[in-house]
Image (cartoon, rainbow, N blue to C red):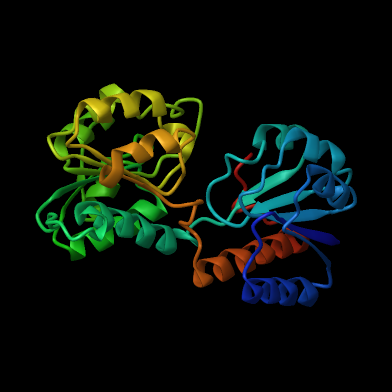
Length: 305
C-alpha cells in the first residue's frame, strides 16, 4: 500500500524516521509531501495514495475526490475539524485521529499562557498568584485532564463543564463538576477553552458569556479560533479593562486585540502540539494505526463511523 505523509507544517525529523520504520516494517511504501505551498501539489500527491497521514492540513471534499484509491486518513493529533469527515464517510474513507498523543504538550502550553497572563507578560509589574484561584475547564478531554493535573499541583480550585462527560467522571478526577458553561464562567477567575469547533460551538464564546466573569477574569483559548466571537469579545474588553484574553490561536482581529497591550497575547501560530515529544508520539501513532487498519481492519480510532 502507498502511504502519503502530507504536511504543510512538517513533522520533526525524529518523527519522520519513526514513521518510516513503522511503514517499512509493515511492507508498505511511504511518500513524503512536506512544506507544500499549493493545493495542487496535495491533489496530485494523493491521487494514487491508499492512506494518508496529516497534521493540521485541510482535507476537503476536493481532496477526497482527487484520491481515487484512498482508504484511510489519520490525523496526527486530536482535532479533526480541518477534515471533511462527513464527505469522507460518503466516499467510504475511514478518518481517524490519535487522541492523547499531544495532550501533555497542549496542556503545558495552556498552563504557560495562564502563567504569562497572571504575571502581566513578565513586564516587571506586580501580578497575582495562581494558588487558591478558581480555575475552569470548558470540556474535559485529554488535554483538559492534564491541565487539571497541573493546576492541582499549583493548589488551584479546579472546576469543569463538559456536556458529553458524566459529572461522576469529572468528580473522580478531583475536579468540581458544574452544571453549565455559564455557571463555569460565573464561578471561575480563569477559564480555559478545550472545546472543538462545531456548528454548536462556533462563536459561542462571546460578549455575554465572558461578561459573566468576575473582575479580573482571564480567558485562555487552547482550542480553536472559530469558537470565539471576536467582534463581541473585543467590544467587551474595550468596555471592561479588567479582563484578559490569552490564546494559542491568532484571531482574525489580531491587530485590534493588540491595542489591549498587556491584556492580550497570542502565539504566532498554533503551538499546542509543537514539542519534539508530541510530534514523535503522534506521527508514530498515526503510522501504527494505518498498519493496524491494513493488517486487521482495525478502526478503533475512527471518528466518522
